[in-house]
Length: 290
Image 1 (cartoon, helix red, strand yellow):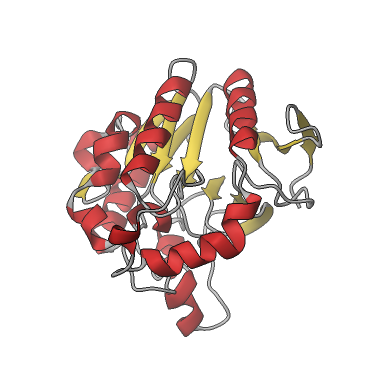
Image 2: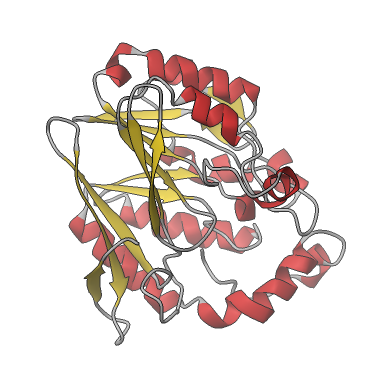
């Protein structure tokens, strides 16, 4: 998430951005550091061959945030393939969705190898599928604009049906699915909390995963690292969250960094490690994923 370079009061006073700005001043503004973001991007580009971003690329969907994020990702894409999905902060208000701001800036990172199976959503063409060696990267969009103090996501019936078709495709079935989504695919403690801050149709997403024997589900939103197993009818998936790329926090589970995954030629997950910004802010150090 990129910290804002200023605040546009006229655009914020009548919509959700006012609540978002209060939160930014109270919390995010003091813990997000641009120099950490640059350190993380340089290290990730040097170490990996695929860069996936699981949402919240911006803070409040301002024009200058989209412009700056596009510049940074375009620069990274000169050395590494980039795939993005939107988070709730990238569709902060309805006008952002109506103007298709997200795909306008990031369409170059959504080129699917199975375009006929994609849905034309306000956030772009999803599911976006990239068939790379033993992996099938499947990017989903669950970002929707919602009222203040509500930050949940929803995939929708149309995209879920498309996901069924993607997972049934022979080129996907012979690879390990690596699913990108912003919100976690798990249920909250109650339905009200699920609708406030979770993935509203998480149960339907888990049902779509039923035929998978193995795979990865990578998500963001919570801004801390964790690793869990999700049982399916055919096997189990590794479900792993990432933190922000600019967070200044003492906990290695939260601190700015990136997760690095290695998939073996047989499609198995060979390793999953996290790298966080060191104390000097200029280098990275390896840590475990809790």
